[in-house]
Image (cartoon, rainbow, N blue to C red; front, side, top):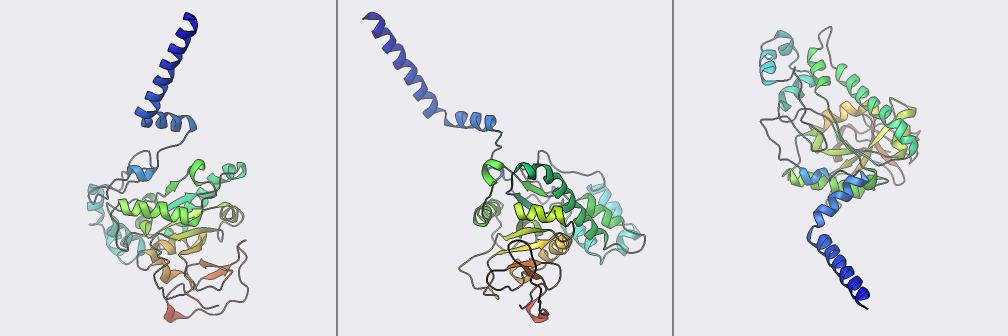
Length: 309
């Protein structure tokens, strides 16, 4: 009998200890679980305010970005150089001077929502092609043999990659938009931003990933308007806050976001089709990326990137 009572006593103590640990140290238990599963804390829980005296930093990056050719001292010297002054009207020069230092590095916020075994092999290729197409777009602005401004732009490019298979695998547009909007809120972004990175976010899903691998120029990414409000009336009745962008047009999109809202850039489209930004009047595709073959000429008065179908 005494042995039975002792076992019940010690078992009760063990249960009480377990209850105490679970309900009095929930954060410790949770963090241990996250570490074991390989999950990182949500970057939105670590957002830092924009600091106009420092380079832009996103908590998804392991360390702050810096480059020896883009310091305060170096930039002051560039401003005295003829090659820098001669490039004053070129887009790269305008972005550098407008964004230095707090909005450099420049780039996009990109969500990854495909985590298949095949995608693991293709993902490095996709990121390389995105960077390459942006580089080609930037370097196309160079004039003659002088391209130092454009080279500085290429060196100051860094995208934010939001990637976590436990959270973002097959995530929907509303889920991504909600996460992006929360990030903007924590940065105190209440009006339309003058920073292209904060105007919208990009998403790479399975069809997008495959299109980029198959066609390094006309592959596409999804573009989600973080400022879209379904209750607001837009110029286009078809606008739903989502479009695609061709790889070849990524640099144009970045520049256009510095001047226009996404609803101004998104082509009109009929039901059942997806609008595609291509740097011009735009086009439309079906779900699989097949373009509408009978395109009518865009109407200039409706804004760049807006066409009629």
